Length: 510
Image (tube, rainbow, N blue to C red):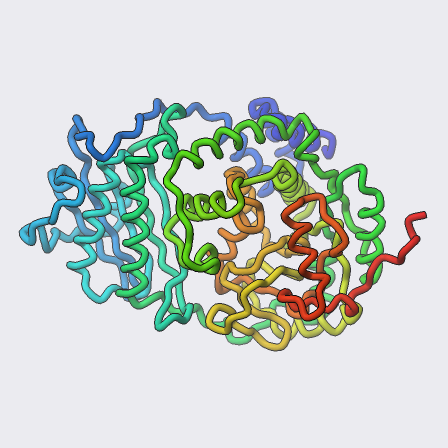
């Protein structure tokens, strides 16, 4: 059975989705963890499915020749949902033209489900409450006109909301359209026309932050702890770690074994993918190079403050533009290899175990000397229903308006922490992470992992003091190596005290 799964996973990594699908089907009947097989099988179907004929992008000056689709708007507030429908003619107004007051109020629909299943453009807002529905309907109709003029595909805008500069909720705008982007006309190649839509999204985001009451944070579930005792936490979260390790780094493998030996745990090692030399990485790298060229053709963008990259942003593309302008690239071959390795670890973890929690680590971790006390504190503070637990992280910004302290040993970072060297995932989040990893447009910790930390911002926690930190001596990824140098400094901004951690003994390699 295990051979079948290994063959299926290999065919999937090689892009042979039909062969992988057949092998997964063969394994499904007798494999005990059918939910894992079902997830991997669905991914093969998604990648192997034929795509509909694309519709090329239009510039803002083009006039749609076909009939404009209907526009549906759903406002989901904490008090309930309100659905509205606009006549198709409203989308034929000129982009940027003032909309007449006679359009409003828009006819409400009796059921939100009617709009959700309708053909056309659908815009949903999920938030706490809107102060002025009529004003917001105007904003959303204007946004829909811009989307229609650009024939833009569907996308989401998700961001934390502020009230008097304090983070206290999240707002999501979901836009669904019948349009597709052709392979020859990616959004990056329509930079001039898309720039105005890009700017409009940013302005919409700023207006939302000023004029809404954000969703309230979900209450802690009656103080119910996730685990009864340290032994439960260790057996469910730590007992079967998956450690990424490049085959030529036997030294790192021994160091990781040494770290986990403090907990009497034997890690599972995942042979990492070398993004520079592995043949399996080359198609992904070539695709990323093309994507980066398109991104470079878009107008430059830069946030006023670095924290905006993590909290106050309108879209993923905006974050990409900022990151590209700051670093001159989106990914290195080493960071691409890291994501391919992480994907490999997730697939094996989901396939080989039925445990609710999955721990994935880098091979350069070192463990805190007082690990038993830290685990005891985590068990007291960690609430039931958590989705992500970072057992170590790099935190640049310690502003109390951004972080939320949760007991003595945890805090919520709302997506502002980076690094992924020791992270526990709820199984359902690990499945979502697989899909996010497919995008491969930003480094893992500020891309796919950041997205899920923001999505589950009140169910994601960071252990402090960190149970694990990274060995600051060197890293395979150049950007990470520069970050780790900061960790070696006394009173460093990460608040790492290197003398508190068990380093692999010097000379032990010989």
